[in-house]
Length: 343
Image (cartoon, rainbow, N blue to C red; front, side, top):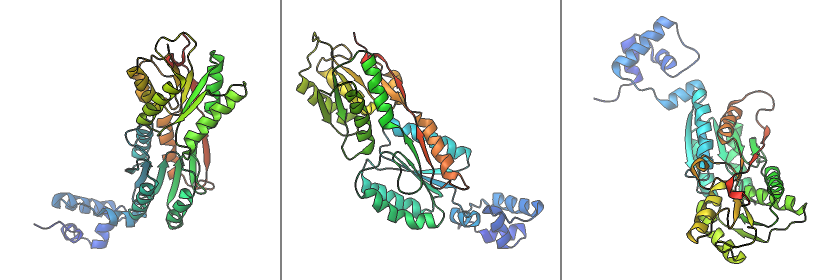
């Protein structure tokens, strides 16, 4: 048996194909309720499955939101994804997901795919990269925006669309101030790639705030913006500073520019018998859910990641003056835990 056609439903209900289409594809121009119910009953009896493309044409909307993240395995992004899903479900929308592994060619391909699927809005979650790559994205988005598509960025704003931007520089500076007040005087930094703006902003805010106290980090090491990047950088840092288990002097306090790097660093030191906070202290950034079960508990800057995900959907679906190019900032909250405690 072939697939049930719209024509078959129309015949069963005793209406024209156009009337059946308006009922089943979500058009605002629907007939009376008695006729509409006949069409729905016929569709159920025949097992008719509506055509999603036809529904999109009838409603002038696909009901789809495209979400692009850097790393689906990173709890930072999975928390944001949860917020996006919660808000999208409440708004009756479905989410298309792409994970790029921080490959900006993949990001552009994902944007093109979502545009081809006529997503109502595209959300880019994650740090922008320095250079011309964002300008190349503008070409992809020009026709999309002209046709009513919406763009929202989590992170540094693009030249177009809305943005929700965590206050990375300011919050990192506040973290430095809190650690100085805690009694730390020797610091080091595990940073991310220099062309990743979030990593650069967090490093710069921290180092600039230390400079206000006449303090310069004794060593800075950069790694990938991942758990493994933190693991590798931590080994280099420990060797460069000659950190030994059970050393007598006050420990260096390290900033890792995100929590997953900090977790990787602690794992690397643990393999060498270096204990946190006895031999070295560390703080991260983001307050990812994974930290609830981590020992020692990690000092960090907390961002409301789920709420950020919910907010970007609200911005993506907003209408009215100024709704297409809005900018919002999200403050972070410093939380000091065992990993930076002076013992």
